[in-house]
Image (cartoon, rainbow, N blue to C red; front, top):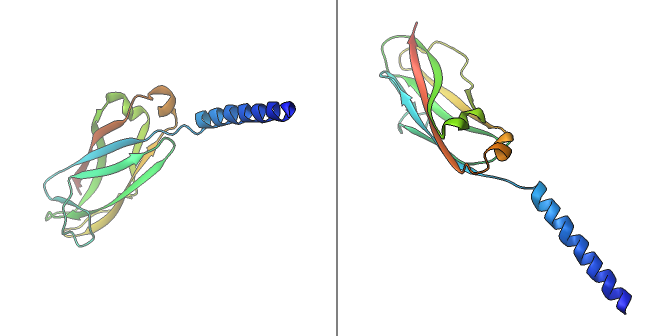
Amino acid sequence: MRKIIIYVLALLLILCIITGIASVLIYKSTMSSKGKLIYGIGLGVYSDAGCTTKITLIDWGNITPSSTNTKQVYIKNENTTNFTLALTEQNWIPVNISTYLTLTWDYTNQTMKPNDVLAITFILEVSNNIIYNNPQITDFSFDIVITAVQV
């Protein structure tokens, strides 16, 4: 009887150790995030293909390290001239977060004529290194700047 109790206690101890190790290996961090949209005169950014709901903010929601997150928007040429688009980011908060995040889009430099509407997908990639180097970051924000370049 005594041997059975010792075996059960040893088994429980082993399970506790394995559970502790697994919880360290499965550590997952989430951050809430927002990207304010800034765009010039003659550009409209919308949440729908019909261009009825203008947006000025992309809410990335909760994101995790090593993830790729996408958001689709619709950009309309509300100008009377043709242009292409350029993308930049600015005002990262906290400042060092840009080291761990990469923002791109699927826009392929096509010319937009007046009243053209393009579906554009923004892609936000999150580095896994953010866990190890900045575990205290729980939220961030930055400005997404879309510029029309006349052609």
